[in-house]
Image: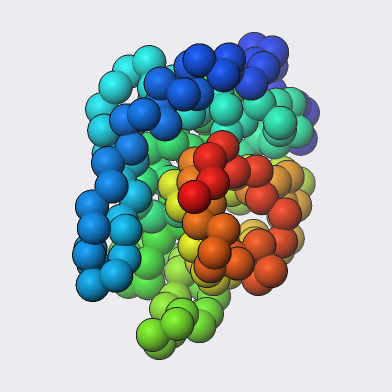
Length: 183
């Protein structure tokens, strides 16, 4: 598969990144006591910050992928924008039961149980896939997505997230990931 022609994008300036980061909303004790929830919704609502985030996520991988996989749900927004910016395709990674005929599925363990993700039948074996999500926490969903893409005989070109919660050690489980911000 040929590499799509895409604009040469570089990492956004520190000032643009600082603006995007300043928009994060922190909600204490959500979804349970003791958790500081980092919400990127205000970033997605700001056009300049949204573009900054999309460009920052894709910059290290520009020209190395031809499909962007967005992990449900905020990953959809980010991956869709990256696909539009680069002239590549978009593939949603969904929770089980949301697709009529999934091409593949992976069950994985969470700290509180198990979950299943599925992918639609849109990949060809030669696709190089960039995985995009909003937050890297424990790494289970990202690791399962890597497994799912491999199961579909495709190559993972890389993985990118907006925010990595370092204390949860997600990289140990999911491998290398490009994170724009750490907390």
